[in-house]
Length: 212
Picture 1 (spheres, rainbow, N blue to C red):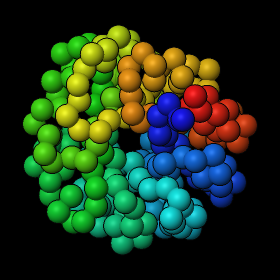
Picture 2: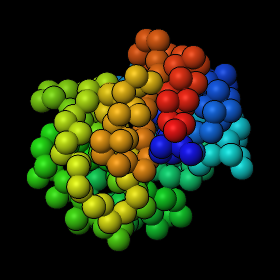
Picture 3: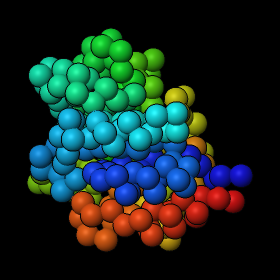
Picture 4: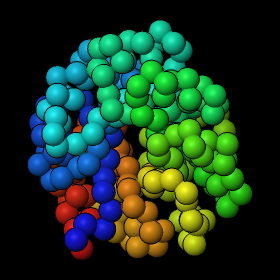
């Protein structure tokens, strides 16, 4: 029995998408954010997303997208979900969701009270994602490979399905799931050989670590 379902994020080539799918990733993610080393244009991600048909759900990761970018992603990529990583309000999430796409809302976490952030989004988003809070001055809100204190999530009853993210890798993911009870995990930098360069061996090891 698998400890948790996984999203392999920041994919950008056919080989690593195939590896993620072969090992049973439930979600695959593509980052459209120029400041990220994993940036990929929606049209470039489309053939990769097509590989997941019938196998996994597709996620487009964005940061405070304007209407033009949302339109481009929906037209050129057509993902199952948009994962919003910026300061998107509940109203903005609802407006995007009304376009016919699911919403994953990411939150930066560094202390227990940060979990209160999700309350206005309940009933609006499909999933929440808990990531390590980015350091002050960072030009990226996530994908930094930082781990937060998992004890913050112990005993927390989340009303919606949620992902654990932030510094997960093949070596620590099983312990992270057991400590937090996360039903879903999200990994990007933890399965890379270098920023933006996914490693098929580490993808396989990460997925194998989730097999109880």
